[in-house]
Image (cartoon, rainbow, N blue to C red; front, side):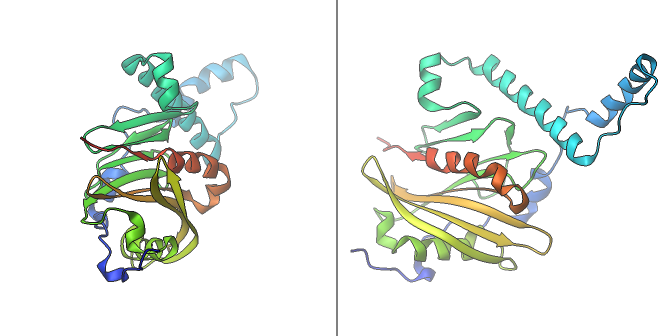
Length: 247
């Protein structure tokens, strides 16, 4: 049985710099505003029908923008990468795109429509350009440990990671579940938690593992108000996280 290690001694990754938020939340260059498109087609709609065109509310407009972005991302991915059907089926599933970092030794899936952004202190970050709390990030740091179980049981390790790294000190966090999973003979800890800020609550999932002399962390989540809609996709992201032995 593994011996629990004090939280202060865990090899935890650094919290991402808050200064990156402006970069993360920036509108993607070159994406026109759909509000302008509605204005452009309004005269045509008026000429064809005596009734004026219906004004879209914020929720409908956001949904329309997301559909356009998702369709564009899917088309671009299919045109640029053009993987063979067999190879793509082995790595991804419908509605997701694969990330394979052979140098770092990991792979995972993320939903269509999310874009890669640069965040200081993170190896990879993909996020939804409409819903900024919907994202996935991967981080890795060197460690002398050989197995995640060397750090302690799942709940203790997850609790320390959430409080010290994954959520700002000002947010109220709650660990919902933590468990151990075996994938190809390697132990992973997966966990679910919430982080409450003054004006929103993020519902998140995480996976941690030790391999190749590194402590790997993947986290993904969404705004609590969209959790029921997003949870299946976010579980797919976490379940897809795999580490390969580097030679």
